[in-house]
Image 1 (cartoon, rainbow, N blue to C red):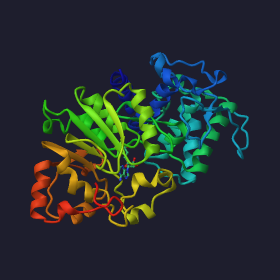
Image 2 (cartoon, protein in one colour):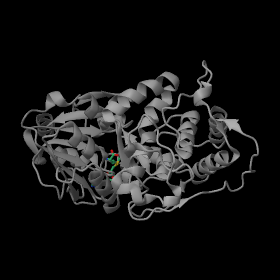
Image 3 (cartoon, rainbow, N blue to C red):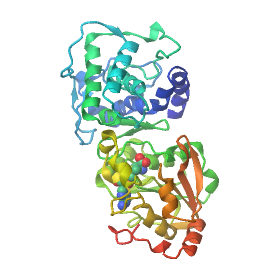
Image 4 (tube, rainbow, N blue to C red):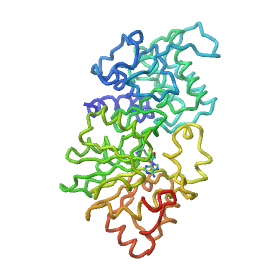
Length: 416
Ligand SMILES: C[S@@+](CC[C@H](N)C(=O)[O-])C[C@H]1O[C@@H](n2cnc3c(N)ncnc32)[C@H](O)[C@@H]1O
């Protein structure tokens, strides 16, 4: 159903607002999480919306238009999330009405002026403002907005009251003041048309491996014998959930060192009714996971030390352990990957493959593993950010690089 929904909505939005189309899955989380049966107690009855977009089924109702989630709480949303109508602190109340497009444009200017950073679902101020504004007002996320070349259709460019403007301004101010990614404020993120709960305990879902799963790029490396899949460094659990959806016959082990992240993953696994197919395991690298596996997916912490030091606050709002690839004393971002590659073959069946995201770290990867020749997988971010290694490639490389299998992790004493 989600795929069908996305296939209807995305082209419509793309036509009007190309960048928002890419972040729309994130935005749409607002619809699904807030009113899925498991999450319905999130909002007090006073905040329930009068609004049900005709294009969406009941499970996809917009979040309450009058409500801003209280930030900074990391408790399980299903039990207690206050829903607070807020006035914008410090912002002079406006008495004039304006259209939706004018409001979004104005809020985008605020984001631009404040120099906020993007990259958690949107890439620019207008898209981010559109997402938060539509979300805040409870408007359909496929609302056709004006483009640079086309004016807004008046039917989809409603007049926004001063009160509504104040609510949006408060949310945008919250985004600016806290420098938290928008998804932490909405507690929602979408990846490949699938909604995920998220809070500060786990990184915001955005792995490029999700594209690879959706596009079926690794299917040729799998077979009818592919049954046991490991999502190592599962974090929010998004890749495990997407893999379970992509391959109905596999069982997944989803492992992470962080119990905080695993609590978020638990919410997402339950939310998608996958608890019989995904087993969550607390594990430092491969140490505590059963095996062998037919496929290992891994989006590890891999950011090098110099890049970590230059991260904007929005990224520093995410757990350090999720990003820094230098937590055992290195600087090249490869602290997790080194022992992983050294020890992965022992956890792989003969025809197994490892799919690994390394982001912008290819130079460090090549320097750390000279002579290792992975298959590079195409993604929207480039052709050198996600790679695939067969067990054979890894063992052969280890054979020609004595010591490759003995790389140790200072913190784990050699356990990957
Ligand atoms: C980049 S995040 C990936 C999260 C998720 N898979 C995704 O793609 O959105 C990396 C994850 O690795 C976990 N991690 C860091 N060090 C680890 C270790 N030694 N063993 C297992 N997991 C680890 C972090 O807690 C974090 O959740």
